[in-house]
Length: 253
Length: 253
Ligand code: SF4
Image (cartoon, rainbow over all chains, first blue to last red; front, side, top):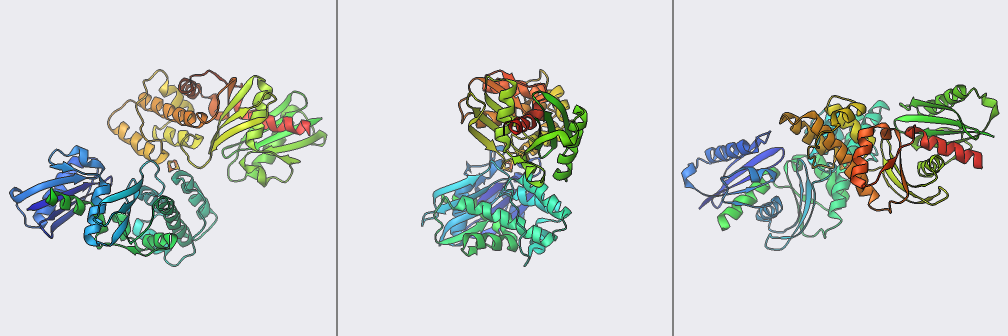
């Protein structure tokens, strides 16, 4: 049976078509129309896999925008989908760290890939993709640029955890002539400390898999690994893990 | 004896010269030079009161910038100074609510105007003057304009407490054509809920005095009074209460 998973996040919408292996994938910006984004991503993933819509068995939706799409056979939380997807990619995974556009989560998994426990922050922009996006903007760069700037720099201390206060603090550091590299490294360390704060409330065991588009950034992976004192497993396409998990759940049902 | 109190806040620096009654006051922007601002405010307050610098007995500093000024005979926290100033203006005061540029506090007073307990938020921009300033900016208005817009409007629900997320939410509401008045009222209700959250951790008794420059805004006073279910005592110049308290402490010593 061919199943699809669609993960409608605040920033990007991801689709995975799966029939025992991954057939096709797609990533599109969510924009203001999560419904449209979901349908577009699904169509693109089907086309990429050369799969006709009529052959699709089941569609499972996840992500904050899942409520807006009526085509789903089932809707499942991101927590469950990230756990399932990460466990599929590495069955030793017992911890998942996910940094989304507007939230961050740490998930403890059981040996079967089920959710044993989780901590989620979706109330405060600190520690989320939004924080990184705003900070990159202040340094007049992108998320990737932030990583490049930070490479091998000593982090400048950024004392404010709050995104708003960190913004002013960063502007102050720039005005004082602190090098951008040091500031960028300070920003990455700040998000790592925030993840550490979340992770500290769960046991960190087994393989720690880092999911979500942010995980593509090597410098952020390094900063988090350093703070947690563990090495991170980063899947090849970390932003697809939630959609993959949703597709796997679609195959099960 | 003539005493002066200088309150160097994140936004404004206030000075009060006192000799049994208020002789002279001054308010200047703090800007990037808290030290300069403190000296300027003191000079202006002395000039306003026609008091020669040589006749000044004691100078007490308060506010986050107090560390930067070497002329102080004593430095005292804002908490103590706001309590003292509010108690002087209304001796029935048992609770002080202060919204500063970068923090907010609720203080419980004993009958003598001393601090019995307090709750302070200076880690999160939500519930501070910064939140109001950012939100006013999105509505293309000022703090006063926010109050005027909000007058007698039904508040639009603003679900995000986080300043960053509330910003996006507000932009979304504007895009949906929600009237600015309703959004402004929603913003004021949001800060009132945040103050309510702080105040809920202390007993609210006696006269509740609202201090800090934000208290000059009638609409914010109303929103907070409504949420707390109490009436608020707002001094004539609420932004001077901390500096007044500092001057009173200077007279005591
Ligand atoms: S600390 Fe800053 S980023 Fe976090 S909720 Fe408060 S305003 Fe938002």
